[in-house]
Image 1 (tube, one colour):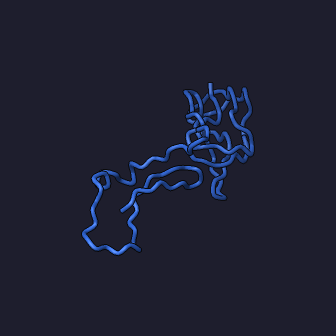
Image 2: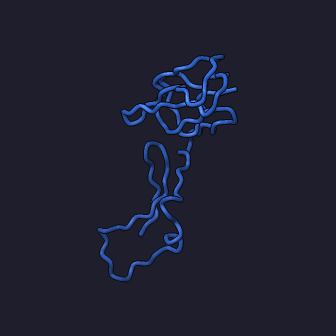
Image 3: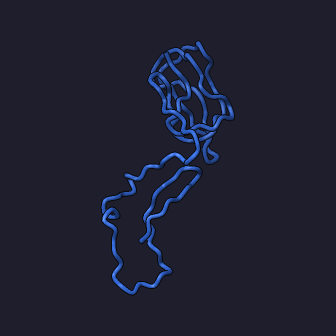
Length: 127
């Protein structure tokens, strides 16, 4: 078993890998940490040398996933109701609609169509 660092789409993961090509002449040893790490607890770390996007601040509607902004369906100053569509994201050739979590006024739009966004990044600020 070997612990490796793997980068997928710019996100770094640490994984435990069993090497099948190597002949086993003795009973394989398990690292002590291998029994305590579960896939649900693995969290990506930002790639080295890149600036991570800040998490959404209070009042901001966060992105539910990483993707590209396709359209913005509101404008600053517009009144929105709870569950009103704010914008559309595209990820893996599928559109995801982002809705307002509560009624309010659009104070600021933090992204533009064509922008790449990360999960948790603020998209629209509601007052």
